[in-house]
Length: 251
Image: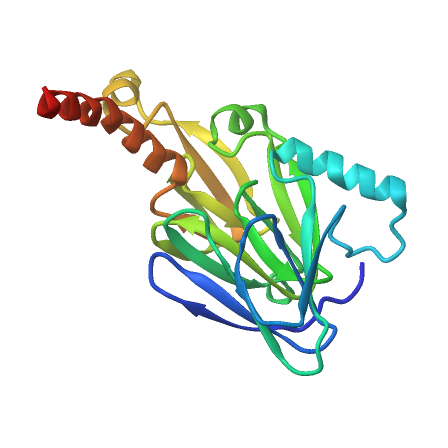
């Protein structure tokens, strides 16, 4: 794995954020397809198979990377944006839903973070984007993250999406209970699992679901107050009422 490019950045906004990244000549940032919002002239971009973090990766290695990304449901290609000009240039990326953009320096957290599969936004070139499998069948089915999580490795900056407000917590040989789906990312030394949410009555009528996610150990965890899945459920729940109201108004 090659050394990541050193990039400068600025985040704009409060709850509907964009991150603007400054690139020196020949520097590159990689991003999910469709994440770019604006960029200066002289920045060129190309959709590629793989993240380019492994300089010796051959054709079959790239095919394997595409196959892994297919498992996560993300675009099969990653877009590489490069400053092909002579001076500093800027490019911006934004989250596809209301929330925050979280900057993480991988060199500060043992060069790896595990995140939910749709949270990656962009990163310095040299970051390795891989998948990791949830080892416990219970958390895979009921933990809100599924069996497949995304692993970001390297020594540079990465940027991830989160819904609503983002809270960073440091656990010191501790355990925390979390609403399933509210886990954005966590360091690799933390143990991710699920536990039953109280007794039968609490599970059925408590409004917190049947299971709660747990993280235990020593490390860093990022939590989101409004998972996109929960927001989508609320919107869909209101859709029939809105349609009925419109019909009554027009009759």
